[in-house]
Amino acid sequence: MSTVPNGVDAHFAASVFAAVDIGASSGRVMLGRVSPEGVALETVHRFPNGVVERDGGLRWDFDGLFAEVIEGLRAAATVAAVQGETIASIGIDTWAVDYGLVDAAGKLVAQPFSYRDDRSRAAVQTVHATLDPARLYQTTGLQFLQFNTIYQLASERNLDGLQALLIPDLIAFLLTGVRRTEATNASTTGLFDAVAGEWATEFFTALGLPKDLFPPLIQPGEAFGNLKPDIAAAVGLPVETTVVAVGSHDTASAVVAVPATADNSRDGFAYISSGTWSLVGLELKHPVLTEASREANFTNERGVDGTVRYLRNVGGLWLLSECQRTWAGEGFQPDLAALLAAAAALPAGGPQINADDADFIAPDDMPDRIRAAVRRTGADLANDPAAITRCIMDSLAAGYARTITAAERLAGRQVDVVHIVGGGSQNALLCQLTANATRRPVIAGPVEATALGNVLVQARAAGAATGGLALLRGIVAAGTSLHRYEPLVSVSQGSLQ
Image (cartoon, helix red, strand yellow):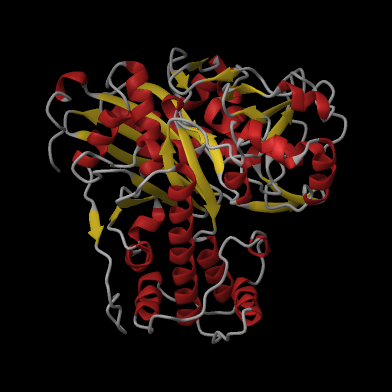
């Protein structure tokens, strides 16, 4: 591990922070130790996550999820105590758009719906009949997705007396008793003004939603509050332990940890936060609210330090994980590394699909749906795991390249390097295909970008680090082993292994 760049050491003390990092398929609680050498992460608790059929729809088992958070914080407290450490604060990040409804007494009235439930599809037309899509975009800058919070809320009934808490804010509320809405996640609702950085209250009125449906906004780095006494006792932490708002939309935290530095990005960088979904885009100072941007379905979401995450949601490794689930049900459980190696050995130029097609959102027989999608293009795809895996990887890489090219054109920016962070950064086949498709170098890593960004925002709030995003990214770059993939001009069979 290399040392942190000059001028950074003095800003650090030995500090430990707890990061609650939950994705759509799994979650973990990690301890992040900040020192002059960078950030060292230790996973103290892992747990599964996923949608369940309950009460007439696809929902999250939030009660079970929160129980896992408590167990993870208890484990974090135990590990820290053994090391003679004090946990300075706790930060929470999860996926976006979904929410739980709580009553005046703070009781969760039902398990939250998942964005993968189809209930909001019918509400799209209702919302657009009231609010013209062009007007929506000019205010919110949000990519159209049928599961955006605005459409989910339009399908609700009897919201009087209730408040909506986005998933990370709901966890923070149960830990502290304080109701707030973190701004990076608020920007994914379709009810947030991308320029003003405030709630678009006129949209609440137009849709008949209570103006106080969401709690007041809180910015990354601000404190929700201290742990409630009963929670502190349950997890074994002092009541003075603070829950700090981070980039609670997991992509916002991941982008904080993109290791873009002056020596590896002369002009500009694109990022791909690759996991269940792929979030592909640029970091800007101002939103792009043009009609061309709307037609291209780009989103302008708030980032840490008032930045704009100008991106598109592209299909992700959900496609492969769902294929693996189907194959396992059929008695075939290939080793992932062997599966990717077999896919890499196949010739280039095979069939592709539109990886972010809405037909792939819900869980089902994914291999069959992928092969059906290929047939609709007039091609054929063998019912073979390696061939299907290669189709997924080729399709994702092609989607990444199209998205980056469009973002450059729409934002008037030029990209000279692509950073892949998250789980997909471990996938050598995907990284190499992305370099080939974008014709740009790809820098892969860190895998744990979301947790790193979470910890670094906490560290800065505590005074264990100072400076802007460039400094935080320098810390990541100095303390992380990165892999660089150069684009291959000619790709022959077997060359991608």
